[in-house]
Image (tube, rainbow, N blue to C red; front, side, top):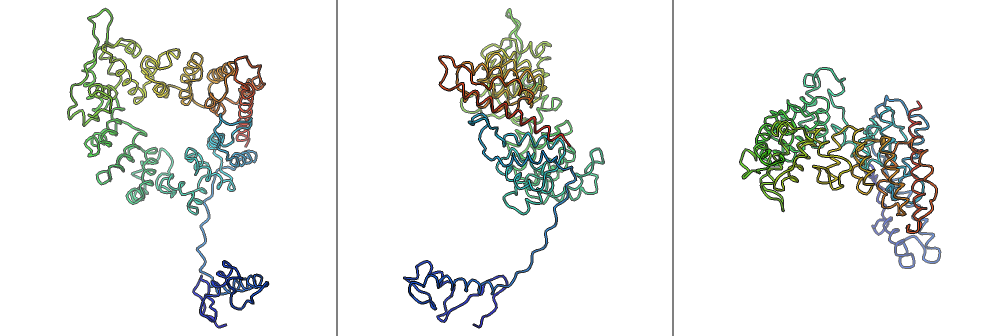
Length: 559
């Protein structure tokens, strides 16, 4: 049969004598059945189906023979070499095991004694990154798949996977998050490769390329770029932002301004003062918040003067008492400094304004204003006219914003205080934020004391701010509280969140002390049916997980 050559990369359209496509005719007959439509050249009857398949096979060969090869694609550039040392073989096998477990079950709510390997992956990655090991190339696809499904894993996975992960991400759309999460979309950042302590970035030979990337990059790339420069050279990042600030969209200005939280210092004040006049209310509010975190800023001084005029000590009664006279108006100056004039539903205007002023005032204001008293003495003073809750809550927010441990200790009070809050904390959430301003050891001791008095029912938020692995006293307090709950005969599911945290946060050396809890206890008369067995299973999983974590650490340190 005479045939016209098909275009490059396409199939030749073979036509029969009636002018129709032979392939389409065969497909139609296959769909309708040879009893209803027999293709040309095939005899009707019992042999027709087999003859149809033979004709289709011949036509397939003819179609393929009519294909012209397309142009070969350009050869891929090889991935960059990863100079870091390879993982120890035992650690590489452990990583493959962790990545193969994709159950995704919550740690404490699972049944059975087997540990949740995916919940151990973050700790494994953190240790591997501290050791500076390179990811095995064969594990990169599974690592990227895991990070795709869990955003919390992405920073650690990308740090561990190194440049090869970015190379793969350019080839697979499912992994494009790796490019979005990396400054410049995974491209090298000119000037940032130079060692710390070298010349300022703005004086580097590559600064022009940085400026081009900043001015022409996508928004996500620009955010990542600004954050990376801010972590390296705070002043260079601020100067770079200033070059395009006036032309940025309001929502973009807000995101860029937020990057100044890293390395916030007095040199940022002129730029932030300028942002107080921004046409976006959200930008003004963020600038005011950042300025109030600088105790020496002009805004902090203005807020101190306003807040100080509202709070005083009254000595006319037998006991010194704090008296409050909340603002009667929100003037333009207050609005410019970030005070939001309209309160949320259910809040009074004056109390709303007072809270914002006290929150933004430097905490050092109050010792001078209130007779040289210490934070503990100030918090212990009675407050007239039911203003205590509003005043103390504002001091809590100020202590968190200004990272002031002395005020945090005063507002936290004793861990034996009622569960609803300490002298100033109005909730356990506030207490958790205040604890975040303390040193890790002090934080752990406070939470251990809280658990010893109140048990675990209210401790989950507090445990979440404690350093991992938990310090000895805190770990023992958690285990003792779990043992008390077991002896009470309740089901362990009520403590599944704490049990899951214990699997990830207890020191692995505690495994030996937990062996006695893996046996099924004698159940008291009022115990829930089968609770003892469930507790034994939960403790067995905890012990197994702790031993597995200990093995992981050994494998990663045996170079």
